[in-house]
Amino acid sequence: MPKFRFEFIEGLPKPAIFADMADRDEAVRQAKLAAKEAMLDGIVGGADPTSWVAKVYDEAGYLVATLGFHDLIAGSENSEQSEEMEEPGVMRSG
Image 1: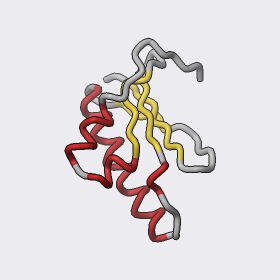
Image 2: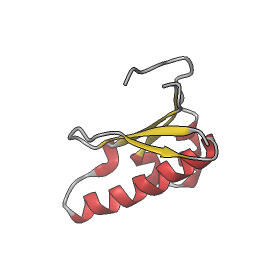
Image 3: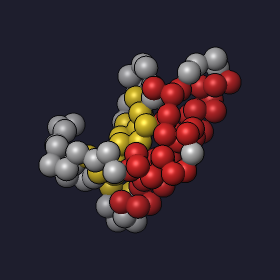
Image 4: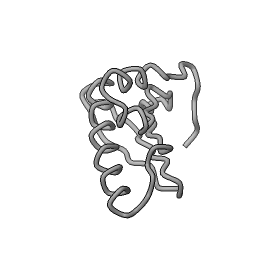
């Protein structure tokens, strides 16, 4: 099973999360679920999560998806666009 790296940019730096997923689609679905949970926690804590972002990288370090939390709030039609905000060929070390 491929390993994916998830980075959640929520104002303060947080360590990356590594997880085995069946494929890219499952990794993006899981990132969306985690982002929605983080948004709820942020709202309860008095934060504005609309500027937060989640990024998903594959095993090779390539960015496969960028999810803007504001897209998840706006509705499902916009959240599909956020998946397309990919940066193919961009590699990140780490």
